[in-house]
Image (cartoon, rainbow, N blue to C red):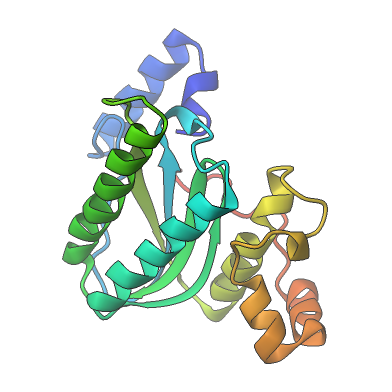
Length: 197
């Protein structure tokens, strides 16, 4: 969805055609893998609207995410909540439960925030996407990608300046040297490009 709205009409039609030829739905992210492993889970506000503009709203979402995922026995090992999307690194033991978990989180926040913003009926969330973690290197590069996301999206100059991130937990438990060594050993670089190919 990040790039879709930047495409011309002809490019969009070609993309949809390619997705259909590969057996994917025309627009929604495919969920073809259904195994027990860690996943990078991402959800974005519809058309990347900045709806999570306050720290209190982002914290409210984070609390609800932890409540729902933990109630279903999932382990969240990293997270970041930005103004228009969020990323989670989660051990998924039952993939089929994810849809209902996101539906509950997104349904309750949409309802409340639309009332607060006096925009009843506004579509707040787009579907979630998932990416199975394939190796130890992929896991730690994903961890770094999550923590670097506020800088990547020009929210702050340093990942340490963004509050709604698991970076602060890792800093407290493992220290800055451990984090720095992880950055060197598992760099982010072009992380995430070409996943649909």
